[in-house]
Image 1: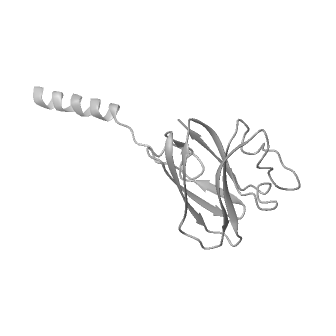
Image 2: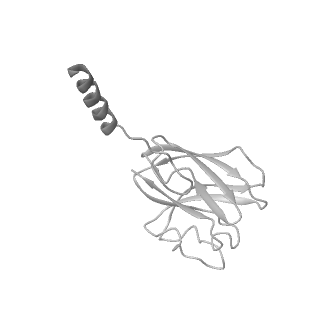
Image 3: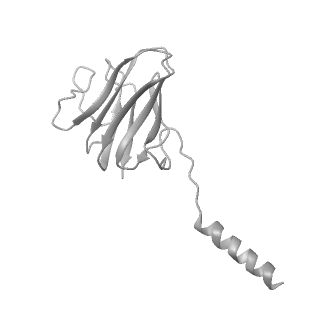
Length: 145
């Protein structure tokens, strides 16, 4: 009986100490590594996680929509839906943004576009900067810890 009680106590302790996290598109737990899947379509951008560790981050970009899109990464303190807009586009040289990198002209059906960047801890916004795409909702946030 003592062995069974000890076994159950150890099992309960192990269960309490472990945790799992399943990333959800557009938010949720961290991926635990620097790989992020980004799904683009009209007029939405979904990331497999919104938190990654600092260092090398690789975005695996899928354009599942019917339109051509872009994937622009900037560092900013602004919320993803509060970036400056001029003539239906984000001025990427704005003093409120620090441009990191981008992939232009990701055509419909593209399944293998990738972007690898080295990110410091902070707040980043990713968006499509083709005419009016940002304003229609093509943006997401990623936080680097």
